[in-house]
Length: 187
Image 1 (cartoon, rainbow, N blue to C red):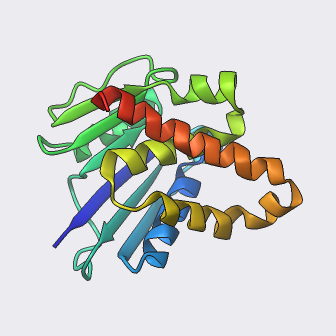
Image 2: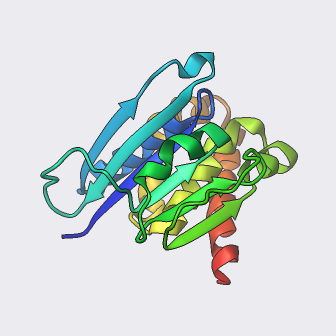
C-alpha cells in the first residue's frame, strides 16, 4: 500500500493549515484516502502550528504516526518541535531564508529552500504557503499538479474570480516551489 505521511510545521500565520487543507482536498478529489490532523496551539500568538497529513491509495488504518515520510519545517521552533518525527527514511525540507539553523537529524535527505525570500522578493508574501505546497508536491509526487490546481480552485476560486491576477500569481508560486526542489535534484 502506498501511503505518504506528511508533517508541516511553521509559525502561526505562515499558512501551514491552509497548505494541509488544499493538499488533502486535492487527494480526496483524486480518489485517494486522506487524513488531516491539525495541531492548533497558541500559534496566533506566535506558537508553532503543525499539520499532520496522510495520503494513501488504500484505507488509512492508523490516524497517528510517529515518523513522517516528509517533514517541512518553516521556522527554528518548528525544527525544534518536529525533529522527533524524523527517521532515516524521512526527507526534511526547511526554509533557509527563515530558519537561522539547519536541522541536524539523521534522515534520508535534507533540502534547504529559500521560499520566504522568493515570495517576498519575486512574488508576494501572501503566496509563501503556495510555494511550500509546490515544494511538497515536487518532493513527494504524491499527487498530480492538476489535482493541486483543482483543489486550489475549490479553496480560492471566489478570490480568483474577483481578482483574476491572483490565480496567475498563485499558479506561478506553485510552479516556483516545484522548481526549487527540481533544481536541488539536478533535474
